Image 1 (tube, rainbow, N blue to C red):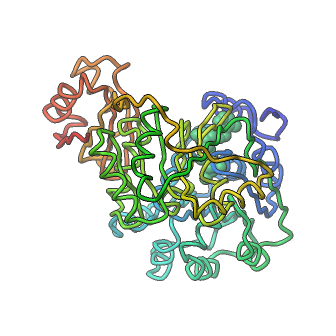
Image 2: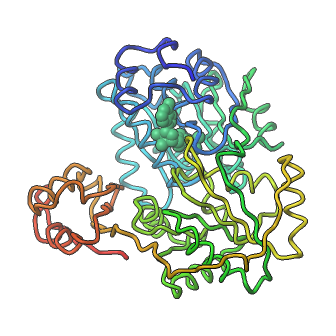
Amino acid sequence: MKSFDILPLGRSMIENLGTMGYDQMTPVQAASLPHVLKGEDLLAQAKTGSGKTAAFGIGLLHNLDVKRFRVQVLVMCPTRELAEQVAHELRRIARFKHNIKIVTICGGVPFLPQKISLEHQAHIVVGTPGRIEQHLSRGSMNLAHVTTLVLDEADRMLDIGFSDSIEAIMRHVPENRQTLFFSATFPAPILELSTRFQKNAHRVAVDVAHEENVIGQYFYECEWEAKADGTAQILSAHQPASALIFCNTKRQCVLLAAFLETKGFSCLAIHGDLEQKDRTEVLVRFSNGSTPILVATDVAARGLDISGLSAVINFDLPFESEVYVHRIGRTGRAGKEGMAFSLITPKERFRLDEINLMMGTCFKVSDIGSFSSLGAPDILPSMVTLSINGGRKAKLRPGDILGALTKEGKIPGSCVGKINCFEFYSYVAVESGVADSAQETLSTKKIKGRNFIVHRHE
Ligand code: ADP
Ligand code: MG
């Protein structure tokens, strides 16, 4: 591990990183930042959760000319959630200096407020290609002063089919610019994109494989009809604090989540068909611990920074071994031990053979019937999520919500969990025992001079 001190960064940058708890660079940061700082083009590959955002964020914020109030940096992300996460991380890093303005420009929200906020100028735009392209074609965004362009999760961006939008957007940014691509994988189309849009790009690939010893991997064989029961058995036998379950189809996600609910588990499903607002809500409820189990497709789950997962369960094994590696990489992060369980039918055994071949392992299958004592499910969440019909547009910040709960509501701060403020909504996790009084406080007392409607989700 290398310290950030060895980079040519200012004192205030290093100090702010320190307050974020960033003392050592992650491997992808150590490999990328020297190039990013020098203004060079870069193609970087590292697994999810390896700190890619700061690997470009620190460099581009250091290089930003704050006095020049024009869009100097454009960061493109595949989904709105990812764009929000990246903007959030950039805003935290940007605290080293005053007055850096970062705006998010994504689809699924009204156009006009974005147009107005772009008219007021910004240094950095983070957004999704579709909406950015719309603003460009309507003349409400000017990228003529861009010095650095970032494609985050570039592989995923192409999967979604954003290549035409990216192409169109590239025509609006100056030729003479720095272009950074970050990706968890490097499939051929990314390399093509790189040759077309980058100049002498440096390539770094770090932290690509997962260490076997950090993730315990278990394979169970059962007939297809027994998989749902098998999933419930795994959950009750191991009682993971949080679990992400992968199915190969949207329909299976919905069915499995409904089945687990009937078995007494608190769980949600996320898949591509959900409305943007519902997706955000599901992710908030999972990441703040108020719903411990999430059932997802690869497309819906990929790239999300849900850290510290106790377990990943493959209800279905993916069609490609790389995807398996990617999925299980969400558990056992940052030195924490994780568990990965996979259910396979006799017909699917060849997929395990392929995984063993690729990873050089020799995992065996056990019989799902080998679980003996199955107590009743005990993973009832201790937290409840409350949603508030106001967010950053209503000038609500996490501190305002925390303040209302602790001062007005006399709720101990230790009973309040994660608070997320989005543009039009906010969410707060509170311990179940204080949920009633928290809801009462937030819906009856004025916050920032306004009354809000508060819903409870469980
Ligand atoms: P990726 O984009 O590679 O999936 P992220 O940028 O989302 O990863 O970072 C994953 C997590 O690691 C985040 O919670 C982030 O705050 C944390 N992180 C990033 N860099 C560091 C660092 N140098 N030290 C400690 N934590 C870090
Ligand atoms: Mg990322």
